[in-house]
Image (cartoon, rainbow, N blue to C red; front, side):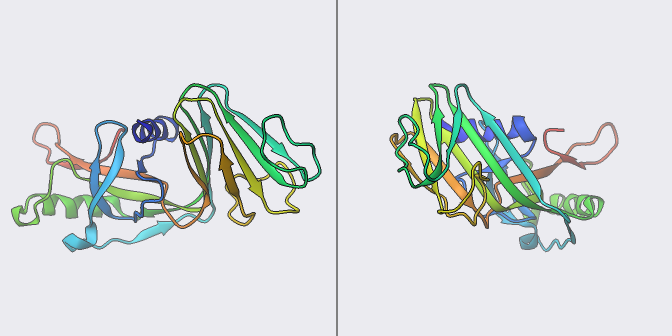
Length: 231
């Protein structure tokens, strides 16, 4: 299952979580569940629905992610005027890149993001303990809260199901190679000879990755406390 594979890979590689499908709209303070397989986030509500307000911090610089998982993943760029690459559908005059995937399940991620996080986690802990003790709020033990959201200014995600396949990506004329696979300004468009690929190309305006916290039981006489999930 590509969704589970993607969620587990993101968790293992960058210690964050992902939503599915790619492009799902999330925001800081969202409340939901993590699926058991793949650890994908499923949104149910937001802290604002429970009357909880919070201040946030925005990072001053971008947070970039770049990783490839899988065997025999080959990325080959082509400049305008170069002869077409073997097996590539790009024409002589076109600028682009050909990405070949082998027979293992594979992921290619290049993402440029803006991080926003909840400023005061101690205050959030106090608020959530109060909510959890109020039966009318219907707090669920398995809830997790998005405490940091990484909003995309340009994100490319390509998933291959484990069959040999090739994805050819064309960029605007005049772009030099190698180019940034997550650059939303260079007009990336793709063609593929295999249907067993899922892709998002240089897509801005969504949250590909999140950090989450949850309430856990304290030790001994200690009450519940807020903890980063997976720590």
